[in-house]
Image 1 (cartoon, rainbow, N blue to C red):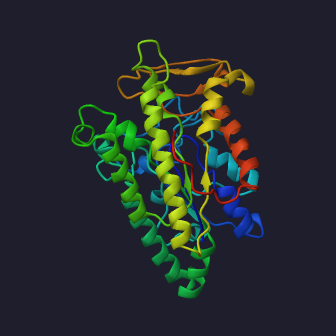
Image 2 (image 1 turned 120 degrees about the vertical axis):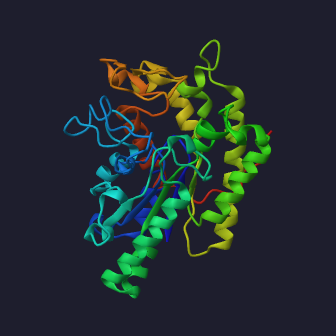
Length: 349
Protein backbone atom coordinates (compact mmCIF):
# COMPACT_ATOMS: atom_id res chain seq x y z
CA UNK A 1 0.00 0.00 0.00
CA UNK A 2 1.38 3.39 -0.96
CA UNK A 3 0.17 6.38 1.00
CA UNK A 4 1.05 10.07 1.15
CA UNK A 5 0.59 12.97 3.50
CA UNK A 6 1.14 16.60 2.64
CA UNK A 7 0.86 19.34 5.23
CA UNK A 8 0.26 22.77 3.78
CA UNK A 9 1.80 24.17 0.70
CA UNK A 10 2.31 21.45 -1.88
CA UNK A 11 -0.10 18.76 -2.83
CA UNK A 12 0.38 15.35 -4.41
CA UNK A 13 4.07 15.17 -3.62
CA UNK A 14 4.28 11.49 -2.89
CA UNK A 15 1.57 10.49 -5.35
CA UNK A 16 4.08 10.34 -8.18
CA UNK A 17 6.45 7.85 -6.62
CA UNK A 18 3.66 5.80 -5.13
CA UNK A 19 1.82 5.60 -8.42
CA UNK A 20 4.96 4.81 -10.37
CA UNK A 21 5.83 1.94 -8.09
CA UNK A 22 2.40 0.42 -7.59
CA UNK A 23 0.81 0.44 -11.03
CA UNK A 24 1.93 -0.65 -14.46
CA UNK A 25 -0.11 1.85 -16.47
CA UNK A 26 -1.98 5.11 -16.01
CA UNK A 27 -5.27 3.30 -16.56
CA UNK A 28 -4.54 1.13 -13.52
CA UNK A 29 -3.93 4.01 -11.10
CA UNK A 30 -6.42 4.32 -8.26
CA UNK A 31 -5.90 7.34 -6.01
CA UNK A 32 -7.66 8.38 -2.82
CA UNK A 33 -7.06 12.00 -1.80
CA UNK A 34 -7.57 13.46 1.67
CA UNK A 35 -6.90 17.00 2.80
CA UNK A 36 -7.89 20.64 3.02
CA UNK A 37 -8.33 23.55 0.60
CA UNK A 38 -4.99 22.88 -1.10
CA UNK A 39 -6.30 19.53 -2.37
CA UNK A 40 -10.07 20.10 -2.44
CA UNK A 41 -11.89 19.84 -5.78
CA UNK A 42 -15.40 20.75 -4.66
CA UNK A 43 -16.68 18.77 -1.64
CA UNK A 44 -17.63 21.88 0.32
CA UNK A 45 -19.93 23.00 -2.51
CA UNK A 46 -22.23 20.17 -1.46
CA UNK A 47 -22.53 21.40 2.16
CA UNK A 48 -25.25 24.04 2.37
CA UNK A 49 -23.94 25.89 5.42
CA UNK A 50 -20.20 25.67 4.84
CA UNK A 51 -18.39 29.01 5.01
CA UNK A 52 -15.26 27.49 3.47
CA UNK A 53 -16.20 27.64 -0.20
CA UNK A 54 -14.65 28.98 -3.38
CA UNK A 55 -17.65 28.55 -5.67
CA UNK A 56 -17.69 32.15 -6.86
CA UNK A 57 -15.61 34.43 -9.09
CA UNK A 58 -12.72 34.89 -9.36
CA UNK A 59 -11.80 31.31 -8.50
CA UNK A 60 -11.50 29.15 -11.60
CA UNK A 61 -10.93 32.08 -13.94
CA UNK A 62 -7.99 30.21 -15.50
CA UNK A 63 -9.48 26.72 -15.15
CA UNK A 64 -11.01 24.90 -18.13
CA UNK A 65 -14.30 26.67 -18.83
CA UNK A 66 -13.36 29.67 -16.72
CA UNK A 67 -15.79 28.75 -13.95
CA UNK A 68 -15.34 28.08 -10.25
CA UNK A 69 -15.27 24.37 -9.39
CA UNK A 70 -14.52 24.43 -5.67
CA UNK A 71 -10.74 24.63 -6.17
CA UNK A 72 -9.13 27.34 -4.06
CA UNK A 73 -7.02 28.86 -6.82
CA UNK A 74 -7.45 30.64 -10.14
CA UNK A 75 -6.78 27.42 -12.06
CA UNK A 76 -5.44 23.97 -11.31
CA UNK A 77 -4.28 22.46 -8.05
CA UNK A 78 -0.94 20.67 -7.95
CA UNK A 79 -2.95 17.45 -7.88
CA UNK A 80 -4.62 18.34 -11.16
CA UNK A 81 -1.24 19.02 -12.76
CA UNK A 82 0.32 15.81 -11.46
CA UNK A 83 -2.69 13.85 -12.70
CA UNK A 84 -2.24 15.42 -16.15
CA UNK A 85 1.38 14.32 -16.18
CA UNK A 86 0.32 10.78 -15.32
CA UNK A 87 -2.37 10.80 -17.99
CA UNK A 88 -5.26 10.33 -15.57
CA UNK A 89 -8.18 12.47 -14.42
CA UNK A 90 -8.20 14.07 -10.98
CA UNK A 91 -10.40 12.00 -8.63
CA UNK A 92 -13.88 13.53 -8.24
CA UNK A 93 -15.18 14.96 -4.94
CA UNK A 94 -16.68 12.32 -2.65
CA UNK A 95 -19.90 14.27 -2.05
CA UNK A 96 -20.57 14.50 -5.79
CA UNK A 97 -20.86 10.72 -6.13
CA UNK A 98 -23.72 8.38 -5.37
CA UNK A 99 -22.79 5.50 -3.10
CA UNK A 100 -23.17 3.05 -5.99
CA UNK A 101 -21.23 5.09 -8.55
CA UNK A 102 -18.69 3.06 -10.52
CA UNK A 103 -16.33 6.05 -10.22
CA UNK A 104 -15.59 4.83 -6.68
CA UNK A 105 -13.46 2.12 -8.27
CA UNK A 106 -11.15 4.68 -9.90
CA UNK A 107 -10.42 6.91 -6.93
CA UNK A 108 -12.07 9.59 -4.82
CA UNK A 109 -11.15 13.00 -3.43
CA UNK A 110 -12.32 13.50 0.18
CA UNK A 111 -10.52 16.83 0.78
CA UNK A 112 -12.43 19.70 2.36
CA UNK A 113 -11.46 23.35 2.78
CA UNK A 114 -11.07 24.25 6.45
CA UNK A 115 -10.28 20.69 7.52
CA UNK A 116 -7.54 19.90 9.98
CA UNK A 117 -5.91 17.06 11.88
CA UNK A 118 -7.87 18.08 14.96
CA UNK A 119 -11.66 17.98 14.92
CA UNK A 120 -11.83 21.43 16.54
CA UNK A 121 -9.90 23.03 13.68
CA UNK A 122 -12.07 25.16 11.40
CA UNK A 123 -15.16 25.01 13.61
CA UNK A 124 -16.12 28.55 12.65
CA UNK A 125 -16.58 27.40 9.04
CA UNK A 126 -19.77 25.70 10.30
CA UNK A 127 -19.52 22.75 7.88
CA UNK A 128 -16.39 21.00 6.63
CA UNK A 129 -15.14 17.43 6.56
CA UNK A 130 -12.52 16.98 9.26
CA UNK A 131 -9.75 14.46 8.70
CA UNK A 132 -11.66 12.00 10.90
CA UNK A 133 -14.78 12.60 8.77
CA UNK A 134 -12.76 11.92 5.63
CA UNK A 135 -11.39 8.69 7.08
CA UNK A 136 -14.94 7.61 7.95
CA UNK A 137 -16.08 8.44 4.40
CA UNK A 138 -13.25 6.33 3.03
CA UNK A 139 -14.40 3.44 5.24
CA UNK A 140 -17.86 3.80 3.68
CA UNK A 141 -16.29 3.79 0.22
CA UNK A 142 -14.41 0.56 0.92
CA UNK A 143 -17.63 -1.14 1.97
CA UNK A 144 -19.34 0.01 -1.23
CA UNK A 145 -16.40 -1.24 -3.29
CA UNK A 146 -16.63 -4.62 -1.56
CA UNK A 147 -20.31 -4.86 -2.39
CA UNK A 148 -19.51 -4.12 -6.04
CA UNK A 149 -16.53 -6.36 -6.76
CA UNK A 150 -16.25 -8.68 -3.77
CA UNK A 151 -13.98 -8.62 -0.73
CA UNK A 152 -10.89 -10.19 -2.32
CA UNK A 153 -10.85 -7.83 -5.32
CA UNK A 154 -11.70 -4.85 -3.11
CA UNK A 155 -8.82 -5.63 -0.75
CA UNK A 156 -6.46 -5.90 -3.71
CA UNK A 157 -7.66 -2.58 -5.14
CA UNK A 158 -7.29 -0.75 -1.82
CA UNK A 159 -3.93 -2.32 -0.99
CA UNK A 160 -2.46 -1.34 -4.37
CA UNK A 161 -3.97 2.16 -4.43
CA UNK A 162 -2.14 5.41 -3.76
CA UNK A 163 -3.29 7.51 -0.83
CA UNK A 164 -2.45 11.19 -0.65
CA UNK A 165 -3.14 13.44 2.31
CA UNK A 166 -2.69 17.20 2.17
CA UNK A 167 -3.63 18.47 5.60
CA UNK A 168 -2.22 20.29 8.61
CA UNK A 169 -1.97 23.97 7.72
CA UNK A 170 -5.41 24.79 9.09
CA UNK A 171 -4.41 23.40 12.47
CA UNK A 172 -2.06 26.36 12.63
CA UNK A 173 -3.67 29.07 10.46
CA UNK A 174 -7.28 28.42 11.52
CA UNK A 175 -6.63 27.18 15.03
CA UNK A 176 -3.42 27.68 17.01
CA UNK A 177 -2.47 31.02 15.42
CA UNK A 178 -5.92 32.54 15.98
CA UNK A 179 -5.82 34.46 19.28
CA UNK A 180 -9.57 34.10 19.91
CA UNK A 181 -9.57 30.28 19.77
CA UNK A 182 -9.05 28.07 22.79
CA UNK A 183 -6.18 25.89 21.58
CA UNK A 184 -3.85 28.88 21.16
CA UNK A 185 -4.52 29.88 24.74
CA UNK A 186 -4.70 26.43 26.28
CA UNK A 187 -1.46 24.99 24.87
CA UNK A 188 2.11 26.12 24.47
CA UNK A 189 3.43 25.50 20.97
CA UNK A 190 5.36 22.43 22.12
CA UNK A 191 2.21 21.00 23.70
CA UNK A 192 0.15 21.76 20.58
CA UNK A 193 2.76 20.20 18.30
CA UNK A 194 2.80 17.02 20.41
CA UNK A 195 -1.01 16.93 20.26
CA UNK A 196 -0.89 17.10 16.45
CA UNK A 197 1.78 14.42 16.17
CA UNK A 198 0.07 12.05 18.60
CA UNK A 199 -3.25 12.53 16.79
CA UNK A 200 -1.54 11.82 13.46
CA UNK A 201 0.00 8.69 14.87
CA UNK A 202 -3.46 7.39 15.69
CA UNK A 203 -4.94 8.44 12.33
CA UNK A 204 -2.22 7.54 9.88
CA UNK A 205 -0.45 4.66 8.28
CA UNK A 206 0.75 6.83 5.42
CA UNK A 207 3.45 8.79 3.56
CA UNK A 208 4.19 12.19 5.04
CA UNK A 209 5.03 15.41 3.27
CA UNK A 210 6.17 18.32 5.41
CA UNK A 211 4.63 21.70 6.11
CA UNK A 212 5.66 24.65 4.00
CA UNK A 213 6.89 28.01 5.38
CA UNK A 214 3.54 29.22 6.70
CA UNK A 215 5.15 32.33 8.14
CA UNK A 216 5.63 33.61 4.57
CA UNK A 217 2.10 33.26 3.21
CA UNK A 218 0.22 36.57 2.77
CA UNK A 219 -2.20 35.90 5.65
CA UNK A 220 0.78 35.78 8.04
CA UNK A 221 2.93 38.50 6.46
CA UNK A 222 0.16 41.01 7.10
CA UNK A 223 0.83 40.57 10.83
CA UNK A 224 4.34 41.96 10.35
CA UNK A 225 4.72 45.75 10.42
CA UNK A 226 7.06 45.53 7.40
CA UNK A 227 5.25 42.72 5.60
CA UNK A 228 8.05 40.24 6.27
CA UNK A 229 7.90 36.51 6.93
CA UNK A 230 7.10 35.63 10.54
CA UNK A 231 10.27 33.98 11.80
CA UNK A 232 8.67 32.45 14.87
CA UNK A 233 5.93 30.76 12.84
CA UNK A 234 8.49 29.31 10.41
CA UNK A 235 10.55 28.02 13.33
CA UNK A 236 7.47 26.29 14.71
CA UNK A 237 6.80 24.72 11.31
CA UNK A 238 10.37 23.42 11.06
CA UNK A 239 10.05 21.91 14.53
CA UNK A 240 6.82 20.21 13.49
CA UNK A 241 8.47 18.90 10.30
CA UNK A 242 11.28 17.42 12.38
CA UNK A 243 8.74 15.60 14.56
CA UNK A 244 6.76 14.48 11.49
CA UNK A 245 9.89 13.08 9.84
CA UNK A 246 10.63 11.07 12.97
CA UNK A 247 7.05 9.81 12.87
CA UNK A 248 7.62 8.60 9.29
CA UNK A 249 10.70 6.68 10.35
CA UNK A 250 8.72 5.10 13.19
CA UNK A 251 5.81 4.18 10.91
CA UNK A 252 8.16 2.60 8.39
CA UNK A 253 9.39 0.29 11.12
CA UNK A 254 5.92 -0.54 12.37
CA UNK A 255 4.22 -0.88 8.96
CA UNK A 256 6.57 -2.87 6.71
CA UNK A 257 3.89 -3.39 4.04
CA UNK A 258 3.41 0.34 3.50
CA UNK A 259 5.80 2.56 1.55
CA UNK A 260 6.24 5.77 3.53
CA UNK A 261 8.11 8.75 2.12
CA UNK A 262 8.95 12.07 3.75
CA UNK A 263 9.14 14.71 1.03
CA UNK A 264 11.09 17.69 2.31
CA UNK A 265 9.41 20.51 0.40
CA UNK A 266 9.98 23.33 2.88
CA UNK A 267 13.22 24.50 1.18
CA UNK A 268 11.64 24.41 -2.29
CA UNK A 269 8.62 26.46 -1.27
CA UNK A 270 10.77 28.96 0.61
CA UNK A 271 13.08 29.31 -2.40
CA UNK A 272 10.11 30.06 -4.65
CA UNK A 273 8.99 32.77 -2.21
CA UNK A 274 12.47 34.21 -1.62
CA UNK A 275 13.62 34.08 -5.26
CA UNK A 276 10.50 34.44 -7.40
CA UNK A 277 12.32 35.84 -10.46
CA UNK A 278 14.29 32.60 -10.77
CA UNK A 279 11.00 30.89 -11.62
CA UNK A 280 9.53 33.64 -13.80
CA UNK A 281 7.53 35.45 -11.12
CA UNK A 282 7.74 39.06 -9.99
CA UNK A 283 5.69 39.14 -6.77
CA UNK A 284 5.68 36.66 -3.89
CA UNK A 285 4.96 38.78 -0.81
CA UNK A 286 1.31 39.51 -1.55
CA UNK A 287 -1.54 37.98 -3.53
CA UNK A 288 -2.85 38.57 -7.04
CA UNK A 289 -6.38 38.97 -5.73
CA UNK A 290 -6.47 42.00 -3.45
CA UNK A 291 -7.99 40.42 -0.38
CA UNK A 292 -8.48 41.50 3.20
CA UNK A 293 -5.90 39.27 4.86
CA UNK A 294 -7.14 40.28 8.30
CA UNK A 295 -10.65 38.99 7.64
CA UNK A 296 -11.07 35.82 5.63
CA UNK A 297 -8.30 36.27 3.08
CA UNK A 298 -10.28 34.71 0.22
CA UNK A 299 -10.81 36.23 -3.23
CA UNK A 300 -14.41 37.43 -3.11
CA UNK A 301 -16.39 38.68 -6.13
CA UNK A 302 -15.96 42.29 -4.97
CA UNK A 303 -12.17 41.87 -4.69
CA UNK A 304 -9.92 43.41 -7.33
CA UNK A 305 -8.07 40.78 -9.35
CA UNK A 306 -4.68 41.52 -10.90
CA UNK A 307 -4.41 41.32 -14.69
CA UNK A 308 -0.90 39.80 -14.64
CA UNK A 309 -1.73 36.60 -12.78
CA UNK A 310 1.32 34.76 -14.12
CA UNK A 311 3.60 37.16 -12.23
CA UNK A 312 2.25 36.23 -8.78
CA UNK A 313 3.16 33.26 -6.58
CA UNK A 314 0.02 33.61 -4.44
CA UNK A 315 -3.56 33.81 -5.64
CA UNK A 316 -5.18 34.78 -2.32
CA UNK A 317 -3.92 35.04 1.25
CA UNK A 318 -3.36 31.28 1.51
CA UNK A 319 -3.22 29.53 -1.86
CA UNK A 320 -0.77 29.50 -4.79
CA UNK A 321 -1.68 30.56 -8.32
CA UNK A 322 -2.07 28.10 -11.17
CA UNK A 323 1.41 29.01 -12.45
CA UNK A 324 3.00 28.55 -9.01
CA UNK A 325 1.28 25.18 -8.68
CA UNK A 326 2.72 24.20 -12.08
CA UNK A 327 6.27 25.11 -11.00
CA UNK A 328 5.94 23.22 -7.72
CA UNK A 329 4.31 20.20 -9.36
CA UNK A 330 7.17 19.97 -11.87
CA UNK A 331 9.78 20.07 -9.09
CA UNK A 332 7.94 17.39 -7.14
CA UNK A 333 7.28 15.24 -10.18
CA UNK A 334 10.98 15.27 -11.08
CA UNK A 335 12.29 14.69 -7.58
CA UNK A 336 9.99 11.97 -6.30
CA UNK A 337 10.79 9.34 -8.90
CA UNK A 338 14.32 9.24 -7.50
CA UNK A 339 13.34 9.85 -3.88
CA UNK A 340 14.30 7.23 -1.34
CA UNK A 341 12.89 6.78 2.11
CA UNK A 342 14.25 9.60 4.25
CA UNK A 343 16.56 8.69 7.13
CA UNK A 344 15.75 9.95 10.58
CA UNK A 345 16.44 13.70 10.67
CA UNK A 346 19.41 15.20 12.44
CA UNK A 347 18.54 17.15 15.60
CA UNK A 348 17.72 20.81 15.08
CA UNK A 349 20.56 23.19 15.89
